[in-house]
Image 1 (tube, rainbow, N blue to C red):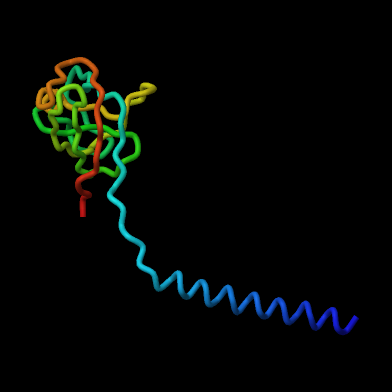
Image 2 (cartoon, helix red, strand yellow):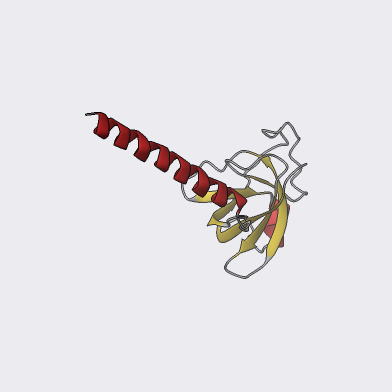
Length: 133
């Protein structure tokens, strides 16, 4: 019985030391930074009747290049590229939405015009280009 216990203890100590050495080697390796992931989906245009406050507290100015996204932080700058024609625009996230299935971003009318969207829907790719400091 004594030999079994001493064998188990010796094995446990060996495994603990081996795990510590491996963890130290992994910690020394530098992990390369990956580019931020891009998101694809359908873009739509804000439907508005009168000026109102956005979820971030700003008053919506539809002549500026702004957008709404469900999860990105307010102030994040995003490059929106229309996959149909290749045109792109950089917008700032100031609101939450869209809340329609399959849509990834709501653009202001000014931003929609920049990528040739008009008042409809378009397939787009989103890429984060900067965050508010």
